[in-house]
Length: 213
Image 1 (cartoon, rainbow, N blue to C red):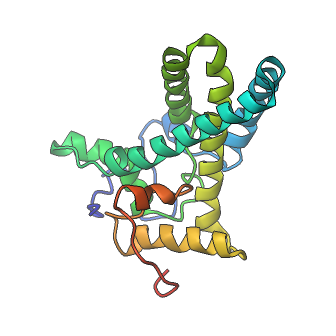
Image 2: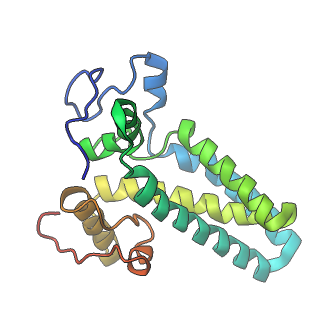
């Protein structure tokens, strides 16, 4: 479970968007409008996917995009489960954990910290591209990365949506209920925000209901 007392001393108040850094520039970088990932990465997705389809055709293009998307959902699940919820030792470790994910559990409605800022997302996606290039070669890697990056954008948009929207569809309500259950009932289950099937595959699923969500 998250230690909800770990609001760092530099936090000015128990507001919906607490201060994370004493440095004003760093603190500004830690906040981001929810549309930024879409604005930054969707043009890259479109360009890489277009060139990929022109080069490899429809069948290989769709298969490559799908593979990239599925690889993202695995990273989303394992990153959330084993990195975001890892309890690092010592005061420095607690501080790192708070910056990575603890602040989100302490202030889940903070509208400016529901999607990853470029300061964090750029290194993650750049590392992902390098791994894909090593695994699939320089020709296929760009279009697979397009699916990977599209998955990331979808994850961030869904994460914002389940926190700040009132879903009207059955799927939307289910995703919101699952994520609210993770936040307010049991932080050791339901790690798949946009890809709930991995919780079923890896044994971290749990029944949810509207009550308490």
